[in-house]
Length: 132
Length: 286
Image (cartoon, rainbow over all chains, first blue to last red; front, side, top):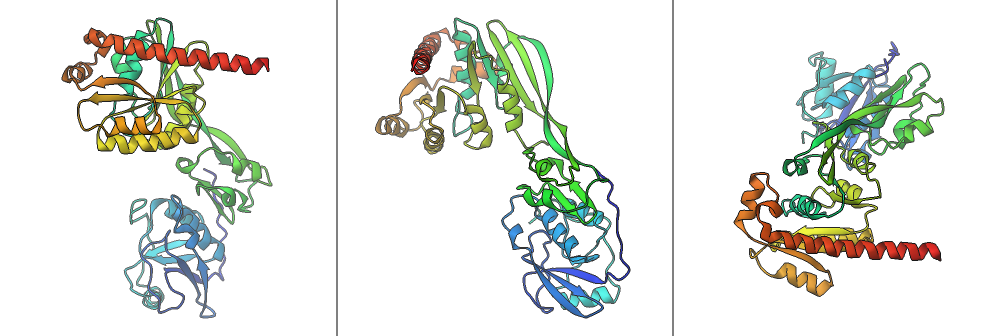
C-alpha cells in the first residue's frame, strides 16, 4: 500500500456527523457507512452543510470506504459517529481524520460533547464489517 | 454437471461417468470452494500452479488524488484521498478499469494469489481441480484457470458448484451440453426450475439426471414432461450407493449393476457430442 502524505491545515475546524436528518436536532446515526447523510459543522462560522450519502445505502460492499471518501472531500478532520468498521477506519485514518464514537441521541448533544472535550479519538475500528 | 440444489449428486455422476468412458477424458472439478472429486480417484499429482488475479498498485509519487479510479470502481475497492489512493484488494474483481482511467498512469497491476490448480493423472482420467485460498471470496477467476486446462481434444466433464450464481455461470459458459442433476423433492424441483431458467438464458442444450428416484414425489418428472426437458438418466434411491460414496468408492466399481446406467448416459452424451460436431462442421462448410 502506498504511504499517504497527510496535509494538515491549521484552519481546518470542520466536524462531520452521521445523521438521517438535516438539522442539528436530527438524530446521530449510529452507522457510519450507511448513514443517509453527513452533516459537516464549521466550528469557526457555526454553520453547517449537508452531504448526501444515500448512494451507499444500496452498495453491496465498501459503503464505509465510500462514505470515508465523502467525509475526506469535505475537508473535515474530525468525525463523530456511532460505530466505525475496519475498512472505513483505514481510509479515515489515511486521510488524517480523527474518529470519535458516541451514543449521543442527537447531533447537538454530540456536538456539545465534542466541544466539551469529553469524546476521545478511537484507535481502532469498534465493530466488524457489515455489523448491522 | 450442474444443479440448483446442492447435494444432488453432481460429483457422483461426474466421476462415475468419467470412469466408464472408454477413451481418455478430462474431469474438471470447478467446485473450487470444496473440490471433492479427488476423493474418488487414486492418482498421481502431475503439477500444481498458483492462480493469481490482477489488482491495482498505486504509485504514490505519481498519484494526485483526482479520484477517477474510485469513481469507476463498481466494488468500492479503491479509495481516493486528496493525497493518494488506498486499495482494498479483497474487494477488487480485477476488471482493470482503474488502471485504464488513471490520467497520470499512476496505477499498475500486480498479481494477487487467490488459489491453486492441480492436475492429477488417474488412469484414463486427467483430473484438474481448482482450490480457492481460505478467506478469498471470488471463485470465478480460479474456475477460469481450471478451464484453461481443457485441451479440446478429449471430452471434458466439468463438475460445477451448486446454485445459479457467478461461479456456476463461469463453469458452464462455453460448454456444449449441461446436465442438471436433481432429486424428486420439492427442494429439488424448486432449484431445478432456477437452474433450467439459467441454462435457457445461456442458450446451452441441456438434459436432466434425476437422482434418488423413489423418495419424494413425481413432480420433477411431471415438470420435465410438461416443459419438454429430456431426462437422461434416473438413479434409484439405494442406501448402498450412499454407503459406497461414504467410503470414497465409485458407484460403478462398488455396485457393478449400476454400470450400465452410466454407460448409457455416456452413449447419449457422445451421440449428442457427435451431432454437435457434425453441426459445427456443416457451419464451417457454409
